[in-house]
Image (cartoon, rainbow, N blue to C red; front, side):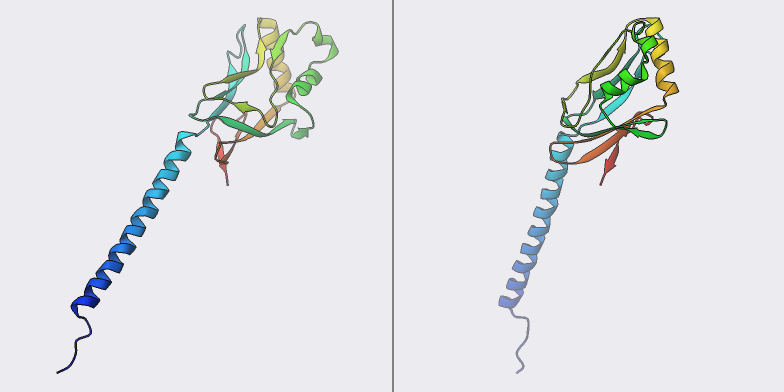
Length: 173
């Protein structure tokens, strides 16, 4: 009589290995879901743009509308297509010439690499409190074609960038 290859012991061993591989795949899938959930729980979402442009109280605001803090990694300012070497506050002082320095009264906040923007926080990069200042500041920003690009990351190191002409942040790979 010929001996059969698949006996009860081999079949049970094979099923145990198959069950173990299936369990491993489920654990890998669950781990991936947990990681995605953790990343989503600290997702920073920066928005930047003008509030009240053309009114008495114009401001250029950077805000974190996400659910996690945003660490600023780089700030790039372009004027007329060329990169400005310096900080945002220096750029503002340079575009407001000596004739306008006495007539334009505005408040500003500086943004620089290493700054952390908390959840729900907003930063008035430019804040004008009267109609003349708002109008003149808008004219100057348009005249110098200011473009602002900010790269930031979450606490897990995921990176995004946002540009002043684009409302939606782009993920950096």
